[in-house]
Length: 476
Ligand SMILES: Cc1cc2nc3c(=O)[nH]c(=O)nc-3n(C[C@H](O)[C@H](O)[C@H](O)COP(=O)(O)OP(=O)(O)OC[C@H]3O[C@@H](n4cnc5c(N)ncnc54)[C@H](O)[C@@H]3O)c2cc1C
Image 1 (cartoon, rainbow, N blue to C red):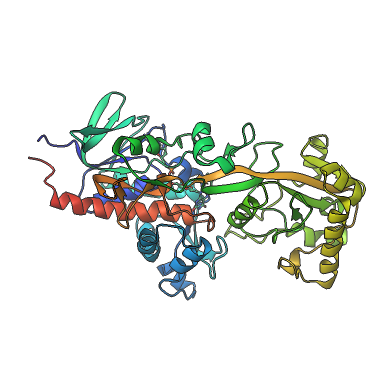
Image 2: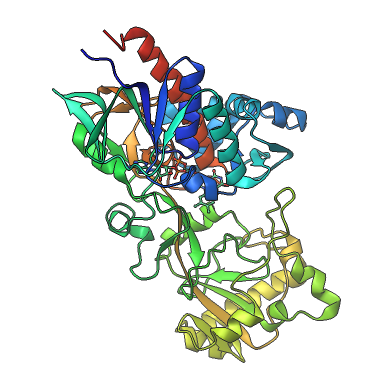
């Protein structure tokens, strides 16, 4: 047996790959990260840098009481337990330590935590400087400890000899290692993969990925090579988009109402994007965002009520402002087939093709609730309730076609070891982050769960890998 080039090769330099590499180095391994792009970070670099966790030192210092197991149970309940419960348990329970670990390696977090989704208490840990700062700090800590990164080298396949994994193949060269960690992210940038494995998100010509180009789904080819179990079909995170451009807008302004094809409301419009995504599935993935002229040009006396239109507040982040639902955009796209503008609700209903009595009735009911000061139907907070009564009226057809995350990938055990279709662990193969399946469910739990998966399982993989190295002689 020859000496491998490295103890560990990690495929991908996003939050998962950097966390795995750093953790493995801390445990004494020599590590090479192989990155297909010319820079570090993948989609992690473009992210908002919110990381979900409970029981971190920061959460405790903020006086937020979060009992052990809370996060796990809420995460599982929101997904009706349709997840890999064992791995989720180990991961969720260790996330507080993961945040402390990241902080210890120089990742700058704000002291203030946020609600990333529908959780019972704030668990969103926000990196000061977003994903860019997260990646920068991790890369600095990794390289300072001797970790190497090979840029512009796409791994084409896993190197397998006599059925055993021995490393990776990139550009015709075989790089050997005792263990390989797959951290190559999702497949949002690959239309063919989206059509095949995330069909509910794929509308040709309209769907677009808001992440990095490297998310090509190469993990699915690697999985094929070694007969890996795949899980998480048609999961991920889809955000509502009008289809008039490829500008991503995470939240709806609170002064809108969102109705289905029958003109019926079905949600608190300020709900987290993961919840709106899940609700759209049951409504044919088509909705109409409705608002009136007062929303676009509010009377001066009411300007504050309309300006403060978002529930989501991030530390040191400028207040959210509408990107599509503005007077300028409506004027620019007034003739677009997705944009309907009419002087009366009846004419708006006719333009969309919804029976006018349904839309008229729904708006009348909404206005009655607004007058009472309480959304008794969908519990939208009272501060967002404004009447829809001033023409012209607007309806923008939206579909969940802005893709932020894909959830179909390799099945792992609680230690990040990859499982074969036979049910057995594949010796030497580990995975973390968006290339895994079974961790992200049908309901995207909220801002922070993906980076938590990437950093949390990355760190776990780094630990597990080195346990293997201590049992396996790496050179003879
Ligand atoms: C705009 C945006 C905002 C987001 N905000 C948040 C947020 O605030 N909180 C949150 O939890 N989640 C957020 N997400 C989701 C989250 O960022 C991702 O799920 C997470 O970063 C994935 O991390 P990763 O390390 O698994 O993958 P990535 O960060 O995508 O890294 C994978 C890396 O692997 C490389 N690679 C791929 N194939 C190969 C190959 N064959 N050979 C070599 N290298 C390869 C890629 O180039 C890439 O650099 C956001 C996503 C987007 C797009």
